[in-house]
Length: 178
Image 1 (cartoon, rainbow, N blue to C red):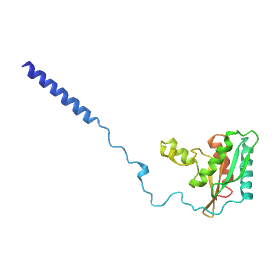
Image 2 (cartoon, rainbow, N blue to C red; image 1 turned 60 degrees about the vertical axis):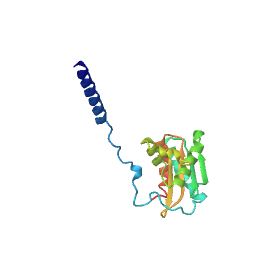
Image 3 (spheres, one colour; image 1 turned 30 degrees about the vertical axis):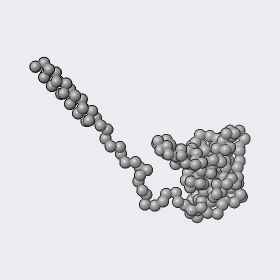
Image 4 (spheres, rainbow, N blue to C red; image 1 turned 30 degrees about the horizontal axis):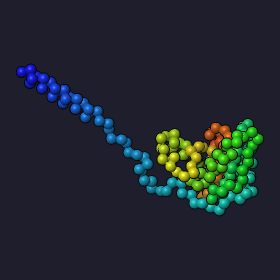
């Protein structure tokens, strides 16, 4: 009798433990947003003729003017539609590390045909595949320059916070991106 009771208790305990474990199985994960297939190709503005040196220098002056107005020391870079440096300025007191960062932001914006804030947002939301993309900087402050629906270059700024860099670039880009 004892043996049957112990066996029954053991089987009942095992059954309850197994059913509790089965009931606690996690739900299926939600669909991956990266699996969604868009109807149109995003960021598909064609590359146009490269920005001229004179226009690039004028953009630098707009960005520097915006930074001075706000009391920020910035590095400002303008690249052409092929991501080649056309013009650069380092304001007095701008940090040295930001020289190459401003150029990297401009190159990324031109090559990938989008503002660099998109990469920053992706990383902040755990979309880590961004780390696998060549020559990407996931920091705001790079903006493509679009004229007549074509990318003619990009502007990149660095030296402040990401939002300061972005505001400085936006002032310059707004003279072309209308």
